[in-house]
Image (cartoon, rainbow, N blue to C red; front, top):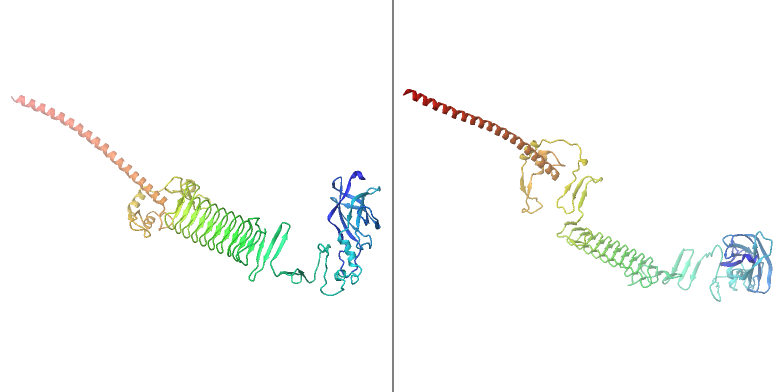
Length: 537
């Protein structure tokens, strides 16, 4: 058996009083529960084993107390087992040790002695305390067990050293209230824990929760002990987080820090988390990130790093190094954007919306793009700009990279219902449309434009959405059709002129031929005249 190297390892709660379901008014038995761990060859044992238990009054030698308790074929799982032992009424206050022997359950051989003997803890001795001489009764009540004054109100349980332990599988039930010191009361009837002073809850690493009392609204400080409420604030909350030297802090009443470390919140301000963030503006908010500041009234920084929302109701959504400094301004994100105009908006990279109502968007190019006037939209987009007006992205306009004119979608595959046009009719209609110079009422008189009125254009050609607007694609189409019509007329004129030229050439040839014939006739007539003149002589 020794070759199998069986040994016992005591559990933290080795001996537990086996009085489950027994009230203090009932008789208490002498049995208790023993929990142990058995190892074989250095590893947790598994299977059935026979155990033998005995009590001794000495850890090494001494005398055996009362009889032996055998437990056969006990199941051991992952080294753990639990048995109930009853040695009778042997608990008189004398120290006792439990001697354990074991052998495999399928063996009929000798037992292996397990060393060292296990000391009995305080629990079994409670059996003795319940019936100790001079206890003031028959041991049926705590008052009678621990207070020799007998039954009555206000009894006291006193320990000479260390805590008083009450062990049992069902815990401790108190019908009334428990007074802890002079300031804390636990009242099970009212379901309350009351404290006349600040109340702290500690864990192994230190303070985990502090409730600070005041006349207005208590402060709740959770997390690291470095977290604190200052400035006489009330109604403050720090949910957790913090670290040594990097505590979270609420500096004014009703501020909240949910977590993170080295964060600070002011009056009605909130920091949800992150590192070194500050919501010092009244009713301001920082969602997270690092080194963000919401200093304006009702300002918000959602996250990112090194962002500042200093204007009233200003917002920075995220990014790095962005600032919203005017009332109602917003920096959507990106890098080093500035929204300093009233209700302005900056987004992207190095965008600066410095005028009221301006909107500036900058691409990744590392240079500043800034607003130049109030209520003006400025965009730097080196890759071009596209606007679509349908979900399939087949209708819209674009401004190509480096370009200065809009391009409309004109793909044949995006069109239907084709019909030819009479280009000469288009030319005639266009000739009848009045073309004037004019200015918009929304602009100064000096800014002039040239073109037709939408009503005249719609009446002449019937194209476009309505008679209040003219699209450039329609004016371009009319102009191109008119040019084709004019070209057709010119071709016809050229044909007529060519025909006339050919006719003139033919006539000129006829005239030339006639001239030659005339000259010949004149020559003949001259000769005849000479002949006639000579004959007369």
